[in-house]
Image (tube, rainbow, N blue to C red):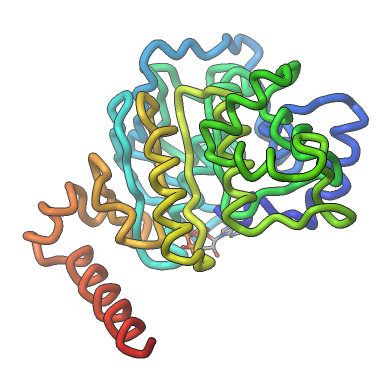
Length: 300
Ligand code: ATP
């Protein structure tokens, strides 16, 4: 998902978007990354999310002709459950998230939410239903309060404070001399990777979407911060359909379902325990990560 949120590419757009008064992050990303051919169907209707059941049905897709990235992919994420997507680099994990957000249209097959083909609904309603916690959060040179309020147009200070509470960053903000009016970014307070992620979580809480895409950071947070953030995310995931692009196997153990992508298809699916028993690709990845972790610990 990293390429989805290219901060540099975004700068010009961010400026324009703010000028237009459009503060929906989703529409901003849409402006940047949506190719011109993704348009609302003339008879598009708003997406009606009753439960948040997400399905990929025989989805094939390639960015370039002749180079398929996804090849007949089937994935079923029942409403309110968490799917972790793992697999080798370049397997198509982020692509899957981009397709759900409809940055691109699928080649063949379809993606549905509560039975509605996402290509047949308005893009605005689709993106309003999906929250994204990216790897790298774009912060504006503005106050921390503004950066959180950005999650939903018209959010008041009380709502911002509640979202900050939910993202476990309220204490940190209150300790700053200017509280929510503290400026962040280039000319202000510098936030750590973990703090930035909490801002993204707070924005998402304000948006309150039924469907969530989490792109796990590849950059190492220290293990305490990581554990804290995971606990916060667990609370955010509750009651929402969640797709996690997982880079660390340690974070997928509790997922309801794990899909192992390989060469554009789901090579294995199951719970952590099921996949370990199976002794396939996932079990191999798990053993390798466990070995690397033990070596790192031994070296400390
Ligand atoms: P990682 O774990 O490294 O992030 P991933 O599984 O998320 O990998 P994707 O980002 O979905 O993989 O990429 C799948 C393939 O599609 C890769 O071979 C990548 O080079 C290619 N790809 C990604 N984005 C584009 C693009 N905009 N145009 C052309 N090819 C792309």
